[in-house]
Length: 229
Image (cartoon, rainbow, N blue to C red):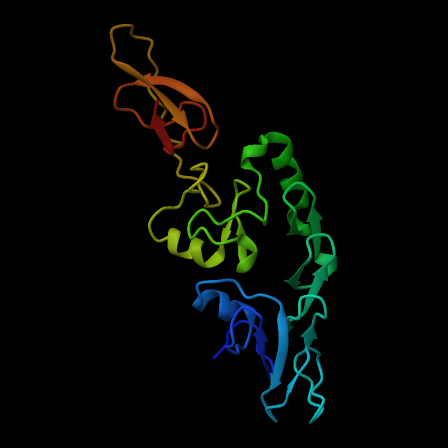
């Protein structure tokens, strides 16, 4: 049973002879990405036909939303973005296309996302044509999730990741709204020249501080998402 895009038809592509309820079901259960949709089969009358949203035999409408470009059937409201060439759930007026990331983003976070690009170098930016760093499959094959750092992972891969680690596997920034902080405790400084000291690199603020040996709290932002240099 499909939990993604319920419809009244089964789809078949040129990648295999099997019929599926939607692309996501195919991609999540197969070792390859679904190719171009060649035919659909009506669930009511079992009529095979070319992709469309109406059965040529019984006249039933296959789905609430149908894209004649991507051949996606869905019971959700959706739209097709001509810039990224993909279909997205929701209303087009609530999203915008980011030229740098080549992804459609929620309009509510546009200002923060623009500030992100102004602050961080290109190595923190994402592209939907690249592979997911966890499963190594192309990002556009499944539902994606934009992390706070700007990197993008498959949503299902992130859900597995968060059970073991809350950091981005690429830049190690926290994926949570607020990283772990210790506001009450100041990181010990090294005013005593005889004290043992080491350098800590903070993944959150990207600053290297000199602190006493045994300290893991960043002197700049008070987070503990650090490593010894």
